[in-house]
Amino acid sequence: MNAADIFGIVIFVLIVSLTMYVTYWASKRNRDASDFYAAGRSLTGMQNGFAIAGDYLSAASFLGIAGLVALHGYDGFMYAVGWLMGYVIVLYIVAEPFRNSGKFTLADVLSFRLSQRPVRSASAVVTLAVTLFYMVAQLVGAGAIIQLLVGIPYEFAIIFIGILMIIYVSVGGMLATSWVQIIKAVLLMSAMIIMILFIGVIFNFNINSLFGTVIDTNGVQFLEPGQLYTNPIDLFSLGMALILGTAGLPHLLVRFYTVPSAQAARKSVIWAMGIIGIFYILITFIGFAASSLVGRDRIMEVDAGGNMAAPLLGAYLGGGEGTFGGELFMSAIAAVAFATIIAVVAGLVITGAGAFAHDIYTNVIKRGEVDSDKQFKVARRASLVIGIVSILIGILAKDMNVAYLVVLAFCVGASANLPVFIFSIYWKRFNTTGAVASMLIGTIAAVGLVMIGPSVMGDNAIFPLANPGVVSIPLGFLSAIVFTFLGKRDEEEAKYSEMTVRANTGIEAE
Amino acid sequence: MNKFDQIAESEEFKELKRSKNRFIWPIAILFFIYYLAFPLMAGYAKPLMSHFLFGNITFGYLYGLTFYFVAWALAGIYVVKAKSFDKKVEEITEKYFEKGAS
Image 1 (cartoon, rainbow over the protein chains, first blue to last red):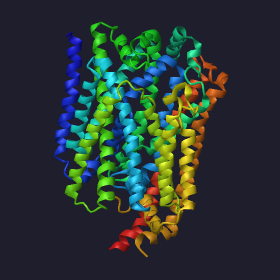
Image 2: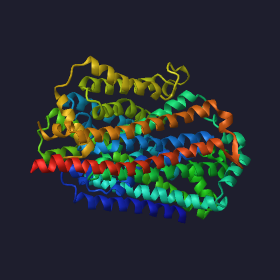
Image 3: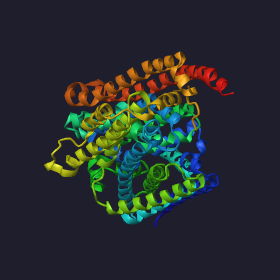
């Protein structure tokens, strides 16, 4: 073992100890259900903005998009753009009314003025589905990446990450989860900025000269669209899922409950948009720099999917692969990638636990008649169960191609959650039949079309697009409208006045 | 009639909702269309997207960057506008809620 490896292990141990200390600190403030799900609503807008960024920027973004740009040039850049766009919809349409009308989960908002049990059950199922897709994608990616970066076996990596996420969530609740995400966001952004400074020095901080080198090494067509995406409709469909799906991701939305007011929720989106936007602009520079400095051949030699582009660029910037500086840089990046993964999976576990314990157990099975002590206990146990199940699924999914699952999560969010949210808040006539139909049809359409599409069936695909959004999203909205008119009016329709007043004013918001 | 109905029926609240809706929906929908033009441009306007504007910088790259800046600008506009809504909300809650609750 050389000095660079030891340095890598030291950073790694530091990250784990820091997050464990935070968890210990948070555990003393983790006393009831409101602490567990919503960090006692104690975060500031800025803290929550960092936590949202930490929740959102996955290893797939950091390593995957750098790789896409490094291998496919402009198309990778185009792909990166979509990830910030959904936040405009989150800010304008969703964040404040969401914060004002719910308590712990997405289903709190969706079932507020509709018939509790059917809507809550449907919403919990959708939340669990989205969380599961996202989780499997994260874990399988994480296991493979850690295997590649650190050299420990896949199963061991998954179990290790799984145990950490269970400890953060079940001991420290949302407060610990939030701070793990904040720490990760700071680490990830720092690592990126250091890399960008090194790249800047090489190219004299001149974008023109970076692109000049890119053209010299990869040819002029590398800066033209069409290297990766040959079907514009598929890309359009992906774009639709990204811009509308962000506002339908349960693990992101529940973050708004951790701040005390709609104003703080607004502030957190602003902070998140700043960090996330800068991240996606910078990550494309890393990709372009890797394509010319490391070279596409070398990147594909190490990993055909391009996931090693950023670490290899790090090694180059540190002095080259095999040198002390290069190994040092690579170890640091591996540690940051690891922190990235645990922050995202912890956020998913707590969201899944909420859907299970707060929605299904407390409100559907027990009809809300559970004392707060019991609620807290059930929530912690649910996080343990969800964590263990995730580890098992992660191990079983080894070697499966799961890259499409993240986009599927966005697609279900846009097709099943967003229509119900928008109509609940903005359309008085909307009713239970419309909500349940939209959630079921939106989810089934998105999942079904992926199952019969090229991601799963390859060349024999029945549905031609890899991204089902262009069909499933309009279908989700349409079925909400059509089934509202087919179903009978809700007895709770009077509650619309209460919801619209709460959503718009924050009166009596918890 | 309970407090919520009372507020929901009030002119001030209806006006607040109207002005909010007039602000959020047109911007959200225009932004949605603006962004979705991007993949279509990449597919059907390849020569323009690949056109070099300054040195080695293509139209397509700058066009892609505009999305970040437009998104940030819209965030700024929202913050300013939301403050005026906050004021109206405060007036409404003072008039109908806190006074009535006591």
